[in-house]
Image (tube, rainbow, N blue to C red; front, side, top):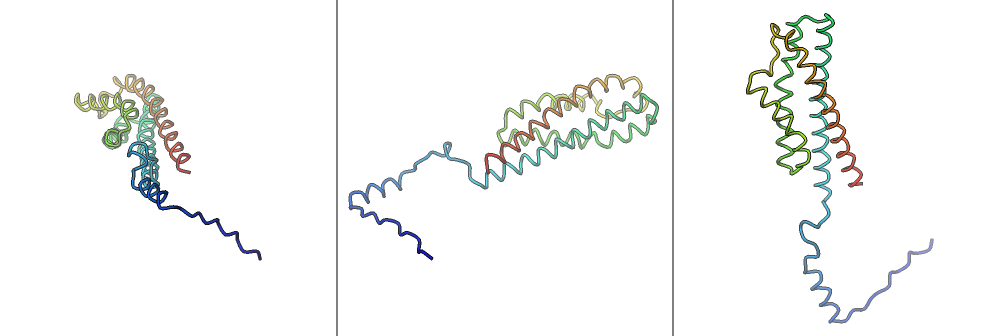
Length: 176
């Protein structure tokens, strides 16, 4: 076997040594222009995984409610059973969306915050007026409006889900 080549030795003068030492002592980059470290990139990936999971749960709740409303219209489910099933997921869905919105605020993701703000305001309005739970006595009067609301909400949530998926993939590609 042939030994590896020896790197050339550079002889420096004392004046070039002091120039190198002063160059090393200077901060070459400011804090804002530095590339993110591996730990911050890993944190971002885990953050977007968390956001994707919470978004999938919120989307599941909305699609589940929409399916139950269609089942109610076709007579496959009774109103009391349907309202009991749906009301079980109302508070966790609203709470999850609130946590997601606050997380975007705290992490500085202002575009995602602005996209989630209308739904957060809508959830706050429904809680404030007491319309967040479905009433079995009133469900036949409100099912058309609930269906229309969900036919707007589900595509919006799908769009947000794919935005979060894009941000996750972008973070993965950027790291590797």
